[in-house]
Length: 346
Image (cartoon, rainbow, N blue to C red):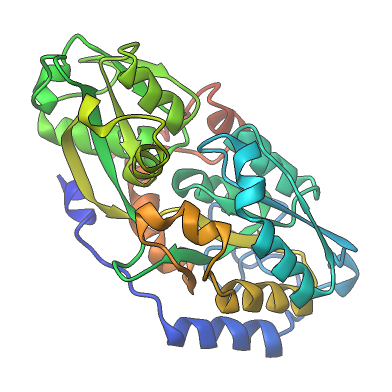
């Protein structure tokens, strides 16, 4: 299957991307255009005339945002209240580099986070892998950074079960109750639906899918034997083990994927370009040494933010979502329904 091979394709991000992004923001001001020449999958309120797959900065400078207080949010893969303290030093640094006050927003769901950005209530965010695509297309989200370290960036989809469940391989999931995270989650739903059929199991057909809402809910549910198994992000499992929330010896990893990009960091497209440039610099120049961020993500070996682009680094995620027939809509994001694209008749 084509999708299985996608995971072996690597994307690189380095100094060249940083220079390119900085130059684009520093020296390029969008010129007025007669209508939108290209939009792609973006919502009708956005335009992508430069074909980089993210919303352009509005050509009309009167539409630029330059708020006195920047609102920052981290993906709600775990308890959002915990992460306000984790990001406290970074938010102080972001305030110093932008000259703005920085306020925390603890989103309770992926949908709430994306809606907050679309409505203008959220300016800078870390959005989880799968929902990044929804943020880009529904809310004008522009990803530009990712956490990395000596081992590189990213995480794996890991299929976990509890000791003694009798599940030794993916085929053993047949007839079982398996926790997926949310419809928009990559490792918690989209990737399993794209990859498991090639391994002999179709989610929702061969086993019962129960949405847990968050990765930590799935992990705790398996540890407590509420679910027979769950596909989860390795990065979340590693942190929960490090904190002592779950005991790794109580769990078994039945299967894991190659690496996916983890949470992206970005800003809303209509920020003043000068402000956007200062936000990017704050991420790239932040020193993690001795901070709560360093302690929190030590288990993942992350110790810095590096440049990425949505076009390059989210290529495999977009292909997985396309394989699953995802349409970027409010209904799909909220999990009310996932619309399938109709195949054209030959």
